[in-house]
Image (cartoon, rainbow, N blue to C red):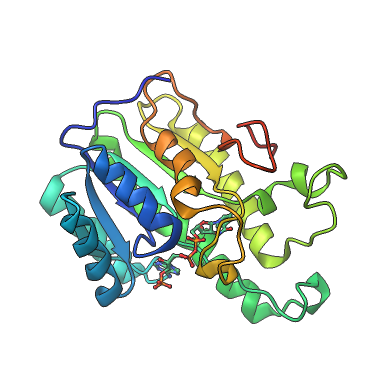
Length: 253
Ligand code: NAP
């Protein structure tokens, strides 16, 4: 894969105030891109952007609650007025909620709705609002941060560590995100835009009370790579970086 020229490019990362999103923003900023720190909290978003600016990166807070259409529309408007186009969108914001002991039979409608609102509908909202600006970029890139728990292939493979695990609303939301990725990729195949899904692996963040085994800076790598792929890079795939569980970079759907 040929990395694209990152000079004067702009990347928006949703949920970039902490966790994996923060490290995706830091790595893209270190490549010379202007990074827009999408965050629903002004305080947390400003603080994250300030940290990255302190490291010499061009990082700017962008208020963005992916579940709030007015917030999404306002963010798109700001990107349009300040930059005119958007080179990279990383749909990273996500939540993992469950009821009881993660048994699917215990899952409530309220939890399911909440998870889908952020992890699926939020991505539709943000992506479709920004797509007109991504189309204006020379070679737009969209990366959807999915999960191995959304892979029906992994979840049903007795040789994978997920064989005995239930995906619940979280896994179902990531499977839905994967299908959206495939669908957008088909629609955009005739353009210069490329859209892919990736999984960061089980990573120590607030999402899992820091129980994950990967470091967020390592978990960010596959997303950064997919954000910077050249013309010869993939479109409509599902990837991961090799890690302690996996030795391949292609994830089964
Ligand atoms: P995290 O530390 O909890 O970070 C999640 C980020 O999403 C936070 O910045 C959070 O903002 C933001 N967010 C949540 N709801 C939002 C909303 N409505 N609007 C805007 N931002 C919102 O979790 P993480 O582990 O870094 O997760 C990042 C992505 O990786 C998620 O999509 C997750 O599903 C995926 N993932 C994580 C793992 C893992 O093991 N950690 C594994 C596979 C996939 P606040 O600070 O305001 O809450």
